[in-house]
Amino acid sequence: MTARQGLATALLNHAYADDINATPASDTLLINEQSRWLESRGERIIKFGFGQSPFPVYGPAVEALARHADKKAYLPVQGLPALREKVAAFHSELDGTSWLASRVLIAPGSKLLLFALIKALPAADILIPAPAWVSYAPQARLAGQTPIKLPASFDTRWQITPEQLEAHCRGGGSRTRLLILNAPGNPSGLSPEADSQRALAEVARRHGVIVLADEIYGPLTHERAHRAFACDYPEGTVTTSGLSKWCGAGGWRLGVMQVPEALGEEIFARLLGIASETWSSVASPVQEAACVAYQLTPALTQYLDCQRAWLSLIGHWCATRLQAAGVRTHLPDGGFYLFPDFEGYREALSRRGITTSAELTSRLLAETGVALLPGSAFGCDPAQLTVRLAYVDFDGAALLAHPPQHHADPMALPALVKVREGVQAMIEWLP
Image (cartoon, rainbow, N blue to C red; front, side):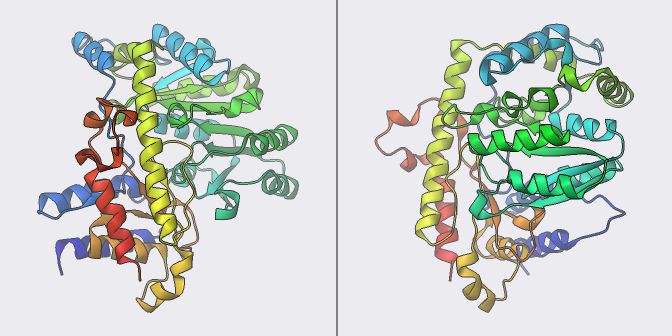
């Protein structure tokens, strides 16, 4: 058995693990570590599994980090006041919402903020679309809450519908409900249509559902058309974001949260209490650097626009190639993900012994070197032949130097060779 085949088997076993008394490693982090391990053994791996921005960190923020490297003081639990002011101004302008610095909380990554909110609630139903990011349901269980899956489908663009939420609320009891929405979504790369979002917000308002809007990919909406959920439901929407995706600074671990005043002081006090007893504060140099990252200057606008242009071009190229090969794939709205559906190949794949998404990704990795994640990792039925493709295995620094309109055939650039090879390998592997 080759190293790649051994890893494929390990991934398959991990995908099937279902021990409710344990919290296995995050699938996204696992695929990243194991892809690195395979590469260290000389295997050529196309890394479509881990959603890390390939673009360099915003330059002025890097310079600010270096200037403040000697800062060592513990900062306020809520976050540096100057940073909270900048975060509030940034999102108010970018999203057209009303962020208040007094209701902003800074943490080492938005992941901890998501968990803190789930933990801060009284006994609650945590409503999670399927597919959804891999950590929402485990976080709910870790916090002692009840995760409830709301399945979506290709036909609804992997979005839950207002009718689904209405049906759940009418059939449930009086428990607190928290609906988690991620747009543009991971794993789908899609956002709800504006009318659907407004209708969903109205259902949430009518039934008193709190919405956790995970909008970490919002600044990377390809056409600069991100519609924050708080635009439609400001009084009941808690919004999270951070530096990891749009600023290329995942390892810096800085997340932000806005809690509307209408939700009251108790929940905010609970969040601060959880923060004080766990992370204390984000590293001082990182917060100082974030003060620069969150300034909407012409340089930052150019940085964001160039990322959006490249991600849109690459995402649409990948999606159209898969569509042409008979793999159902939506064109992405933002971020750097696709969620292809191989249902059209079910019979042919079954003859190869492939009947689940975990088997599909396992075999693709073993036989082509393309690392993907199965739809089952995101809460989908294991028999659903969906995968998440993170089209990020490219040289972001090389692309950031030149917008795509500067090239006659931008997809032919050497910086994108692994993206081209990875999609082509998937297509050629199909029966």
